[in-house]
Amino acid sequence: MAHVIDIQGIHRIFETGAGFNHVLRGVSLTVEKGELLAIMGPSGSGKSTLMNILGLLDTPTSGTYKLEGLDVSTLSDDDLSFVRGRRIGFVFQSFNLLPRASVLRNVLLPLAYGDVPSREREPRAVAALTAVDLAPDHWDHKTNELSGGQMQRVAIARALVCDPAIILADEPTGNLDSATGEQVLQTFERLRERGKTIVLITHDASVAARADRTVHILDGKIQQGAFVGAGTVGGTLAPHAGTSAPAAVPDFAATPVPPASTAPAPHATVPHHVPEV
Image (tube, rainbow, N blue to C red; front, side, top):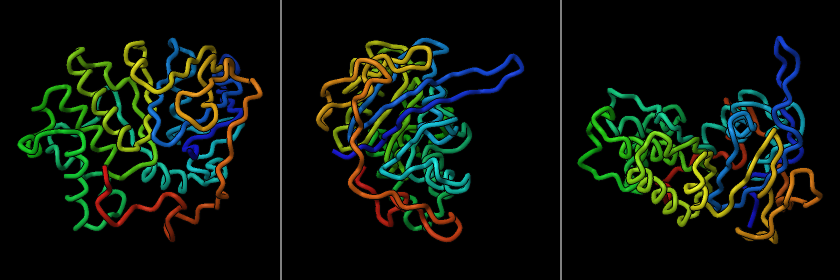
């Protein structure tokens, strides 16, 4: 399998009034295509900073990050925004939906920002909502009329609609009761079975147990689960960050992304068809 995510030697240092805060310390991690990965760690461990770097919302102080073989550390801010909007889907604990807009409108919104032709938007939104098993009779409802589980499924559909390479989910069951959280986890499992790559942050060990692999992070270092052995999900894991376990390099060469205003980035093209979600 090709690595969708390949980060090597990532450090993140923040400068504060009290000095320097070294949040991530030499983090290396690979994620395979079609893998459901959980990241666990206590508050202050660096997991949210790691998620922000994976989502191209923050840049590391040093180290390399390849997304689908593309070295994103070489990209301009505009190109990072371009790739983020087309190759990464986000799911948040608090849903972050427009409360007075319909379900369908919420899912359509990323397509409008992504310059997807109007005729393609609704079929793609319908395909995404169907993939998360939200009944069509809810699609015209405002999102503030839905249950928590229904709102989270709308958020997952919104993340899915641009057919991203990865879905990043930050505590996606944190605001839900156990029964509703189970429905959301089943949705992620179905998407994984269809080949989607999902990375989720959780404090809940029972949620992490549903993943193919769990990465434990503490004091800015990965303690367990950094690598998949032999290119197979569930393979041998590196016991500590900083070990010599190598991450395979994709066969194809990364190509610099042209400016977003002139041409799409490699591996970041919005497909001109309804994605198979």
